[in-house]
Amino acid sequence: MIETPVSQFDELDRRILNALQLDASQTNHDLAARVHASPPTCLRRVKRLIEAGVIARQVAILAPEKVGAGLSAIVEITLDHQASERMVEFEALVAVEDAVLQCYRVAPGPDFVLLVQVADMPAYHALAHRLFAGHANVRNVRSFFSIHRSKFETRIAL
Image (cartoon, rainbow, N blue to C red; front, side, top):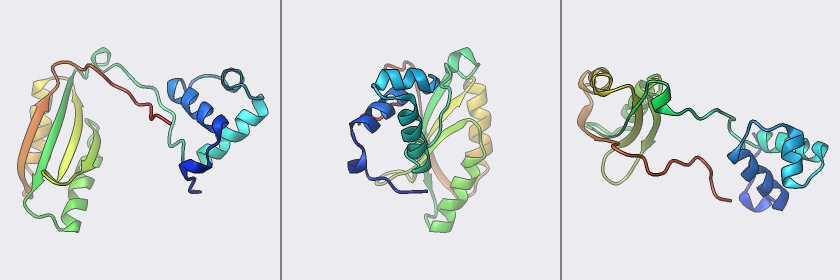
């Protein structure tokens, strides 16, 4: 993977990235028209941005409540032992759990912050029991449940 510093993006790269962040499903012709470039140029640029790792993935963003995953939780985890191998062990544990959408090591404060999406409170309870109660190195779990999402954005401002 090629490293591409932000300073190496020109205006066309920025227009392409912004357009794809809004709708990655558009055809190359539509994208080219939207960013005022020729289709071959646009295709070459997108390919280069993918190869450089700037475009990590192209995905569909689902409405959680429409697919039976209506409960969002932000979970803070503090471990008893923070040795590197123990941190990696915990990350491996949550990496295979589908309900954990994101996992961050953070400082200061808790060791990890997880973003979790489950069907309901019983599903969260089962997840918590599986991941946290049964893990000897988990010292503290603090969960926050979303009652209203006022903003959700995946676009990074360029």
